[in-house]
Image (cartoon, rainbow, N blue to C red; front, side, top):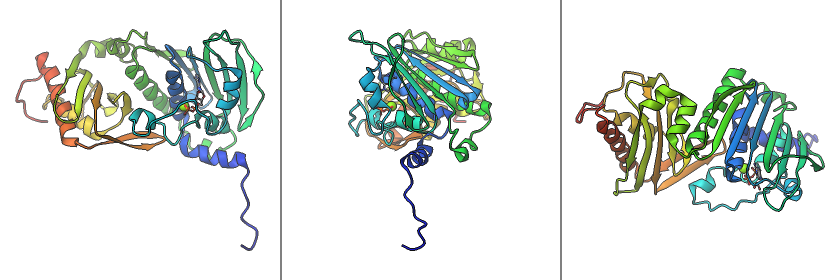
Length: 343
Ligand code: ADP
Ligand code: MG
């Protein structure tokens, strides 16, 4: 009450503080923009970053695009064209960020959105948001789709900027995120370019194996064994995807890509289940490649804007379904002996 130290913060400052909670690093921006492109029904999504995304991030798609009026609205707070059912994992995966991604990114960067609607022969338009300062919509040429360009990320929030890591580290996060979207959406042609060099480009054939070939290369793609099981018991409807031969491994767990009901999750239960499926055939501290989709019921999503964690109501059932699906796939290819001891 006394001293007058309590001042109301201006709107831009409040927005920048809030943004810092959800946009942590370039990879978080990339994640939101790629999700928007996928939501817009894009058949191709091209991601291009400079210096790991710390200098520039561009995400271009051929999705449904926006009219000039949509564009005005889309960059403002709490605007979304999507209505979600909160029980649906798909819907909650960006909860806390609903209708806020473009607004949030625009408040901590110089963001340019250029878009043209696919239908109605609409013309293209562009808007620039300069660290929260929303400019006017101007006409701009572009084929149908949307391009979002983000520069000067955290340029006016030095405390945040300071926490960014080396470009190579930030690029690692970007690469992992885009890789997961590419694997989870094999029907979409996804490309990633870093400092002008193409890192990978999937072709959008719809085949996970083609996407894996593009992102991981031939050695890995050739070693992939198909997993496809429908346990018909408990909460798991289907476990499908690919796992690598036990001798095609890396020294980190990061190539164990698991998806629950189509969404990328980093989950210890699933990872352990995959490893157990190898029945002791993996060398110590070596981890296989996996692109594994688990379709199941009884999933509680504990959602934080920066990550997606899940809890399975029937954890033991999920674990054994995944473990045996992986084991069967490797057994079928004669790579794992039945009854082999656990490692
Ligand atoms: P949300 O995705 O939660 O709706 P965003 O701030 O990410 O919120 O986007 C706001 C709105 O802008 C979206 O609902 C959508 O209508 C529009 N939009 C954003 N990105 C794209 C895109 N790449 N293509 C078409 N529309 C987009
Ligand atoms: Mg969004």
